[in-house]
Image (tube, rainbow over all chains, first blue to last red; front, side, top):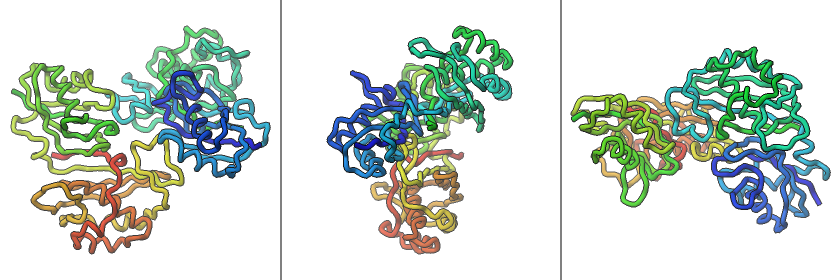
Length: 244
Length: 244
């Protein structure tokens, strides 16, 4: 028995997120079906996180156990021959038998992309969130620093998740602007349900002047979801990297 | 009666090109249906070119005549409310009654994007052509200069088109590399059928060493399609701009 770790890139547009569901197509299901085709085994794959419907990934990590004789580094190519064009395995290797891609995860980096211009874009529609209102990047960057550190992010969590604690450590949060494209990078030891998308929604309210950068401190301390911005749509979000 | 010029961006992935066909969905058909909805008239739209199935556009130009009282600059917004998310009108204005977007066209710029890396990409699959072989950009750039000028590009034309002459003037052809992304920009007073895609296919053969840069001159002079590279797939191609 071997434990294989894989790194996956996927376009989440046509999927109902990572996790297997009964009636709707998911990334996990596609990976498991491809594994079944190449190994003949019924393999259950463990994902490092549950990305939502429409969310993308460049560096999603998963692992699975197999008795197959396929060399670990060849699983990449073997799986890619069976996967649809919007899912690609970028890397595969054998790891310790007790490696668990979710439990062992030490942190993640997400990127959220905003298209800030007059007009929506046909070509970027599935990979950006279109915001017409002119956003003040300086204010948004100023606000970022208040998120850094170990804090209780209860106000930045959608209901529907059952986690023991809403304390997380954000290690990095910064913004890059390239013409009309605003990229928001956020790294943390873990994320609450919809946390990135609510942080971005709140930063947008800073960018439009509805919230002052220095108010972020009070908003975090309030632990009140009503004080934070809206949960922005999934297509702007991409899981960049998972750390171990 | 007014003559309205529009500039359109579209994602060609799900369309059978610009031109209206009987049984398959095209960009022209979508624009005409949207126009019918906003004006109540049956309007025929003239396009500046016929892009092929799967080809994209950022700056496609078209024009149409209408008796509608909608202010010319408002057609943009009116049409966008009726168009699918992968087609966007970026600009609209009234032009001279005898303006014809195809006949009046003085030139066009296309961009072709190659993804040159080990692995195909899930996220870029619809907007790039994946080439695994390592491409020598210096050689490709060297080859570009032989294309410039007024020449007979018969060897860079797919059969199936009926044009009087295959002489065209390429005013610009250059390559930009950003990591694994290779962007090839080409501008000319006009293009033959599949001309950009065959130029790119030929440049790729230069990049892999099959063709020497200085051989391009002889290849052009041969007027022989068998000497040029393959016609690369449509999804890497985007019509950037149309000049008048």
